[in-house]
Image (cartoon, rainbow, N blue to C red; front, side, top):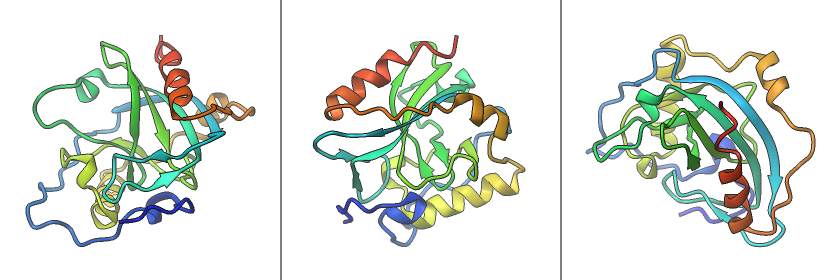
Amino acid sequence: MIRALGMVGALGFASTALAQDALPLVISDHGQGVRRVVDAQPFSLGEGRFEYDYVAGHPMFTRGTLVVLAVDPALARPRDAAMPVLYVGAMPLQIVAQDPSSTCVVGLVAPGVDLAAEPLFFGSTEPAERVDRARGTAERAAALAAGLKPRPAAELDAARTAASLSPRDVTDLYTLAKARVDRCD
């Protein structure tokens, strides 16, 4: 299990072979799962570490990017059955806030993941906490093979906020995330 702070992007989580009982890799996104990046702002925690629960190994970090995404509500709607996982490249997005209609998702991107270089997409329904390096790489490859690309540079430029957030701790980070959940309107 990886618990170091120096985690970087898709290379930062536990590397294990795909589980024998892993679900088949069929991505759910046909190009409109993520409709736009509304906001992207770097953050650095003042104290404590954030545990990235959405990948195998649960890496810990103190910084990353808070993103607000306008998404297809049919793909993002929470449900009791298996649902597609939202990815940033080869890493599941750690979703921390969502509006009731599921048109706006607020999540955390691990440090080192370049939003300009990675597609944002809804992958298969393999539970995020079971995604290891091999599965994440395979999900990303399937998305690229399906023609999904990184978001347009102009969209990312408009969404980026120069000032970095400095939440005191994880609780403050979640409070900031919840305050942004209405930005997709």
